[in-house]
Amino acid sequence: MILGMNCAVKVAVSLPDDLLSAADEAARVSGMSRSRLFREALTAYLHGRGSTAVQRYVAAYRELPETPEEIDAAMSSAVQLLVAEPYEPYG
Picture 1: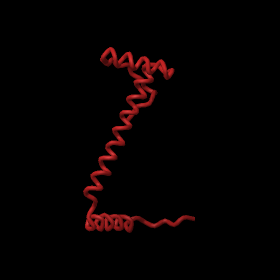
Picture 2: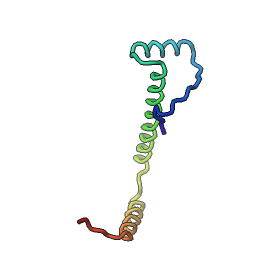
Picture 3: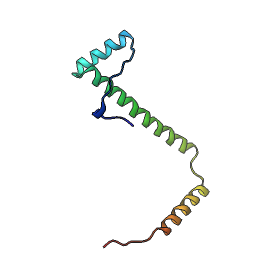
């Protein structure tokens, strides 16, 4: 979960001098505060990790997709669940 700005907390991080200088320059050039630069960079990193997880899942699925038997079992379970639900027509 990524928190919004509704509960900002100050943190201390240690950075090499050259990285801090580069971050300050990037913040200055983009017209944003250092905090905003770090917040946006961390948000982008965390979102990227999520898409990486999805990419790994898709790659794994392509290597080992469900067997026809597994698909039949899933379909059978879904049908049984739907049949058990009462039907309420619209209108």
